[in-house]
Length: 73
Image (cartoon, rainbow, N blue to C red):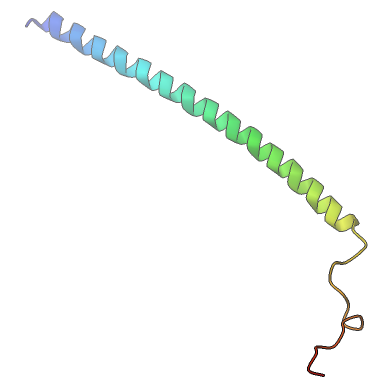
């Protein structure tokens, strides 16, 4: 095999690797974009939940004076 043939073979191999890497990078970029969108949605939902909790006036836990004593008293 001549040196030119070897170089051409190496170039073809490198071009194929670069094409594969470009595809992989694009897939990773798409996955990262989707994760970023999901994270933004979750942050927004958390903000709304925190706001709702702060606006709640009624506590779900009875105060100590409202608690009925346990049956053994």
